[in-house]
Length: 149
Image (tube, rainbow, N blue to C red):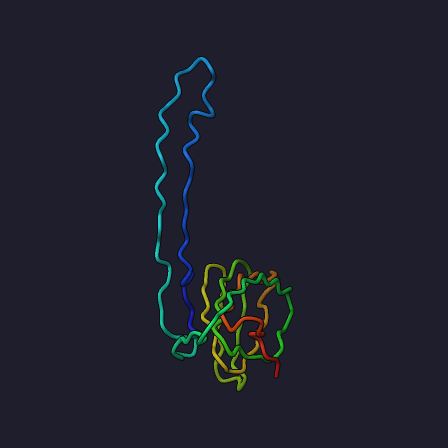
């Protein structure tokens, strides 16, 4: 899988001006200045980690957001995803290997992964830290996006 710094997710940050809340009653209050959102494009791409064209499900689609915690020493079973899956690495290191064992990719905190489509692969933690992932699936409503071999 290609290594991406962060990902297709745009991060929106905004802060509220709270200066008047912190002023003692006998002091004049500062005029509140509305905060402006900051939008930073972190990633844009059209292919998966294997270079496959990203394709969206036809018809109605369901977006599912999952949190994964993969403990040190864990090995994920060989599996594949029939629909788009994206992952953002929050913590730890994850090694992903293709089902034929020819290619492997390592990801760490801050990496964004556009997972392989319909390609067998497995994953395992690297090191002593739990891997924490934010995973986003997109597929037909009510369908699983992980198929075990």
